[in-house]
Picture 1 (tube, helix red, strand yellow):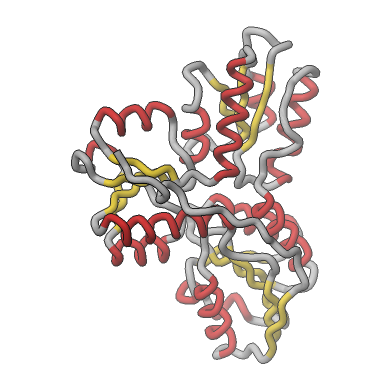
Picture 2 (cartoon, rainbow, N blue to C red):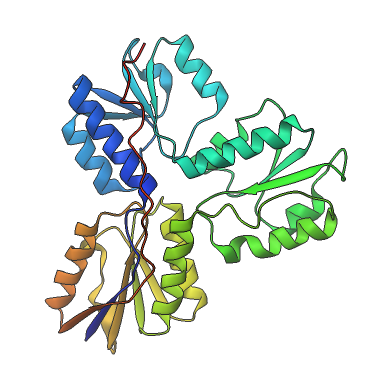
Length: 308
């Protein structure tokens, strides 16, 4: 049995920045440091940061006054920022710079008088944060049918953005439906981040070389779920696994080539664990695809000045 590794895979620049922000904040201010929601969607990363002194909460009201508080990589609404100020929290914003660019786009469209449409999953924290960057109403949609039934005040003043962790296949038909209904609509070709797109492209190529695909990532990771869906669309069996412990040996019956990739919030050590498991279950060779080199780097957030 042969293992073929996707390239690129695993941590993106925004995730590296977010995790480094938490670790450096703990070094600078000491434990505990509070984080609103999971800093990134991976249970192993969260467990490691908890051991180092990070406390993850779902409500700002659960954080003591004056405590150092980090906003996750997914971004937050203006209402959350205001509440943090009112509660007297000292905040650091670890929002991924690519998500922040979508925030700025939404604010710009709103100021110019456009009704804003967000293509994304309404229960995802990134979408909730993006929708909350303006004080007006936004349309949250994810299907063509929602485009058809959406009620708008002025069809000539429409604009859209997309969630950064979707797949191109997720948005292409929805965007086409928006453009058909609103010919003058403004918006980017895509807000899908470079890392998400690169990993999806790698999976499409990998699916053509393998008999089964393992996507290393947590179940609540949007980009990891999209990688699984992209692989399944190529016609092979795909499994989303947190780590090697999730693998069912029955999945490998009759399999000659196993593809392995990882979501943007999954550490490479988890991929190593999957490789070791596969070696113990019959894999004899490991090769890595030639992939697109990623050179984007982001500096950690909020550590260059004292918090007020």
